[in-house]
Every structure is written in structure tokens, then in C-alpha cells.
Image 1: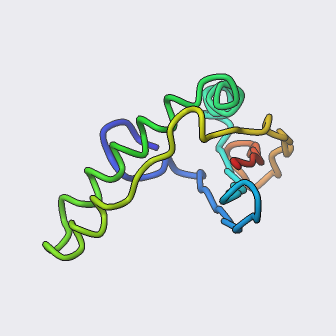
Image 2: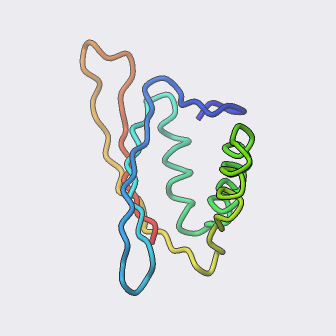
Image 3: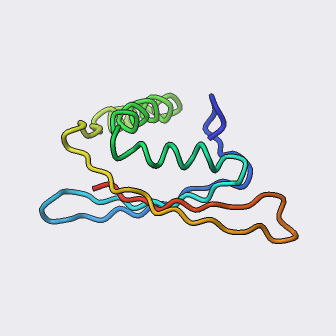
Length: 118
């Protein structure tokens, strides 16, 4: 993300899939494509998630505030009813990191980070 905005850096994206699990609640698997210029910072952040879930929890609160700012009153009530997990409710698997060699037409290499929250 570009600091202070809700936009991704050029060449970066994230996709996620959430599934309901019978005993543990919800499992979210995400895939992040990261431009080479941001790869080191992204790898550090991905690796720290397992040992420091508090940053994710804090960022969920920031996202709720940001999304709520442009919402209708009804939507704000629904957004405010959402609760972020506590650190004890969250576990994160170590990310799987792969790197791609830039093609001649690409300006930057691309790294992909796969992770799961459950």
C-alpha cells in the first residue's frame, strides 16, 4: 500500500479466499503479488504476522474506520457491528515466498507471498 492512502503500489496486488471451518471458525488464504521494489518490506511484514498478529488486528480497525467514513448510516451500523479478532483468536501460518525472475519486458521482478490466517 502507498502510505496514507488506500491504493497499492504499481505492480502490487492482493487476492484472498475465506472459507468456513467447522472447529476453528474462518480460514483466510491470501496471495500477494509484490513488485521487486517493495519485496523486502513485504517479506518482513509477512514473516512477522505469525509472531505479531497485533499489527493485523490494528490494521483491521484502521480499515473499518476508513471504509465507514464514506458509508451511509445503515452501512456504518453494519461496519461498526463487525469485530476484529483478538490476538488469542488469531493464528497465522508462516508465508510461502516465491520469487519470479523479471522478463525482458518487465521493469521490476515480482515476488509472491502466500499465507493463511485461521
